[in-house]
Amino acid sequence: MDQILRFLQEHKEEMLENLRLFVERETPSTDKKLLDDFARFLADYAATIGGRAEILPAVGSGDHVRVRWGDEDSGPPIFLLGHYDTVWAEGTIEKMPFSISDGVATGPGIFDMKCGLVQGFWAVRALREVTGVHRPLVFVCNSDEEVGSPTSRALIEDEARAAHTVLVLEPSLGGALKTARKGVGRYRIHVTGRPSHAGLDPEGGISAIEEMAHLILELHGHTDHETGTTVNVGVVGGGTRYNVVAAEAFAEVDVRAVTVSESERMDAVLASLKVRHEEAEVQVEGGTIWPPMERTEKRAELFAHAKELAAEIGFKLTEGLAGGASDGCLCASIGAPTLDGLGAVGGGAHAGDEHVEVSSIPKRAALVARLMETL
Image 1 (cartoon, rainbow, N blue to C red):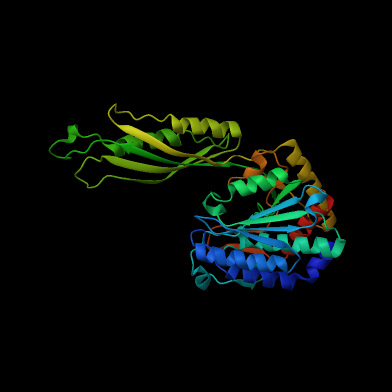
Image 2: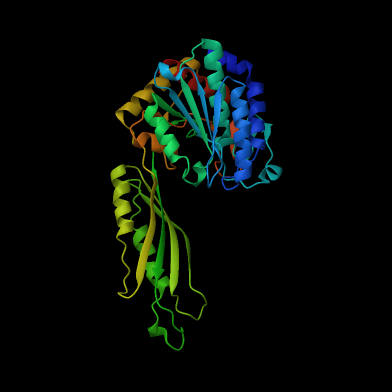
């Protein structure tokens, strides 16, 4: 058995206890107090494995945590990346408690992505204690990924520029690494019409809702499952009363694309929307939040290396395209060598059945440790 894997297998119960501590400390993206409390917990935790932890204050989100190991002057570091915020509201742990049954661990945020964080920290411990390798490492745990990483984006991009390789501890795709991801655009459309009495003066008004309905159909017409482009108008609203021609309407739109060129095309489509009635007006806000992460030759080489290491550890590794984006997209977009989906094996992200396969935890941590050792 691989020495690193043996070490992690021997410490599996301790890893699971760490995972419980991570999951039971709730971290909804919108609760700064809970997030900041977790950041302090995380900094103390990292220090127990020799990390030099910094809490990076943030306004408008929780504080971020950056941990360093090794001599910063001895070359570009391996950059480990993961977020600690979740989509789950405070109190969810009471209804969805951390538990382990039949080899499956459950709890809010366990798959996306607290298990990945635990695996990452244990990979660092295994690397240092088993191999004696003390190469420079940096681990950023941000607090706002689930809401688009507005306050951590610059931090992540700066670390990625300085890195040798970026290892993203986001959950896997059914065990597969994510060598490509769709980009995500978020937009808000606002249409202004003119109000009038729906019975006494129906022709005097301009229905913003009617104009919006045409725009929604136009946008959904851009969905193309062959190219992978999808458009979803997920939220709509407008009007004041049933008997008033609506003067205002709004819609919130999610756009996903596989390639940068397609993402840019859709951004142009949104920017050039036109209403049908000449006296109505439309305004569009927003844009691309995460650019697509396209499968490049360098990423294919990284995956091939990870696949060989996984075989040595004792499991088969595959790759795939993820429909969701991550902060790995930010790293890839600036040209940093990036490998994503190195975290948990399981499923149910953002759902009531969120879970992790316990047997996979030491193996995935071993893979990250071996990548840090050999890259």
